[in-house]
Image 1: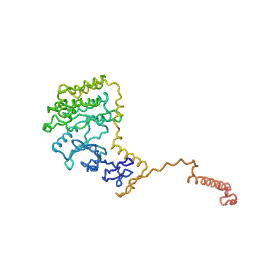
Image 2: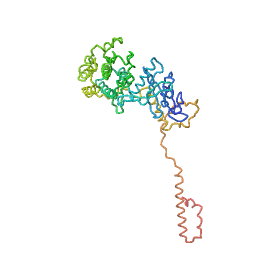
Image 3: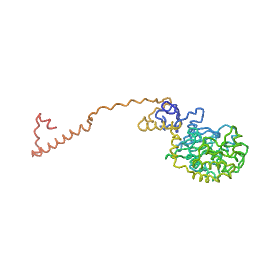
Image 4: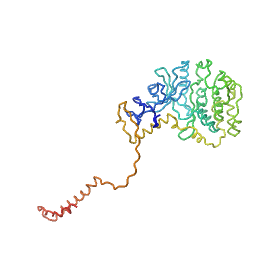
Length: 444
């Protein structure tokens, strides 16, 4: 970022011309299009290029086991999207590609407002796969937990309700998420200010009606052990109940800022999931009606066998609805906990560009008259001090006022001459010329 708050680099979405630094007008010198800010990921050669012939890659939003997530501009729709690509390198590339295609197939069929929306998918010329998704403005719950601490019972209950809505649709379609955890849940604020949770990354989902089950039969354990159900750990058949177990572990962590089971090694942690009774919220949070109700719900979610848990996400939703949380203003809690989009680095760059464009539209320099020389760069001009108010003066006489008065007088003089001629009765006689001293009175 520059000292003025603008990004150091920008690109034109039409001609792909880059600017380092961008001009103050924030428009392309060649075609006048508004520029898009480029991120600071200098080591990524894809930044500033077009993927899939329709997505201009602008910045890196994150990296994970599946690949890189970019902030991209969808050229035809003129909107920002998140574009996820499969890592170009890594072991078992064929297996990763199959898992990626499975993510596309699983997520694209879901329409719940609490599930991340998938717009498009494809394959790049390099052979890498990509997935275009909606871009979210919010905070993953693991980050929110680190920054703000544990959630209130009312907000934790709300998270559970929204996740159940997402899982209900997915389970009805034969899809098991397999990796529910705070990092895969994003808390947003709707324009109304109400909190809204979205479930991310069905990337390791298992399609129950898919005959090809060999992807996870090699002994590699997918998912996060801290939230993993016993049947997922020991390799048994996995169904919707595994997601309810992970949601129970997630709600416990959100309310206590601690995992339900903790150990120093992976093997010890897996053993606790398999054999140790789930802990209670009451010793940590007290025995209020809301805590007691949520404690019973979470302990049932963390039961060792699927049959002991809730029979469905809808049943868990009904149990959470009955939790007596009182009148706690959840929206106000979220308003202070979830930073608005403008507080995020990428959003700050966009806001600065938008403000610059507004200034330009209100009377800034015309982009069409800007120099097209690539080496010509505009330097920021310091704002001049505001002038003091001048003393009041009489309004100047306009050009129109200067000729109106003589014209009126001339018309009056002409009328006088005509009337005088009529009174004389003799049309052939000219009137006697006026004396020299009367000439002024004749006009004025």
